[in-house]
Image 1: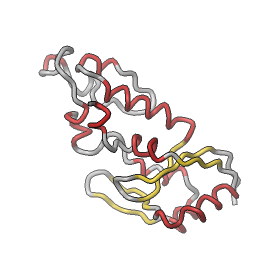
Image 2: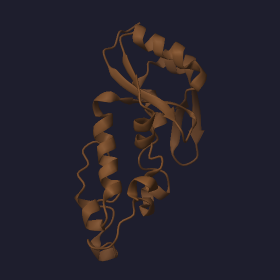
Image 3: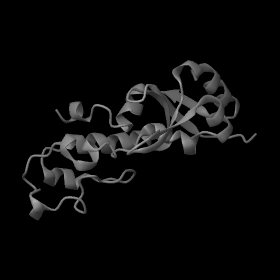
Image 4: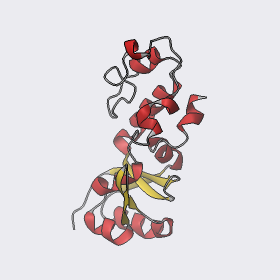
Length: 162
């Protein structure tokens, strides 16, 4: 058994009705990027949002001003192609595959396959106490933050923009 010294944030991912995990070291910065993009009022503002942790679904390599996305044209994050088709941001529930030890994935979760967005680890809400105890025993620091997890999952992006 390997001992880790990693800080994870976890929460109830509403879209999949299960737990999801994220790296606490980058989660708040990723959330700030999502909030900044959602707050953009024009395509020009959206293009200016700096993304260091996430891909930029409204960046200049995706939407060119000369293709009808002029800098002064109103921006709505829910109308961005990657957001509409559910590929941005990536499902927060898939992060458990890289963050949790394989034996805990096998014991507490179940791989679920989606047609368009790839696989995710479904971790039932009922196993919370046991999974957290095991993670902490292995040296993980674990903090619950449902709001952060759902923001990272892109849940309710339209509400952020209004």
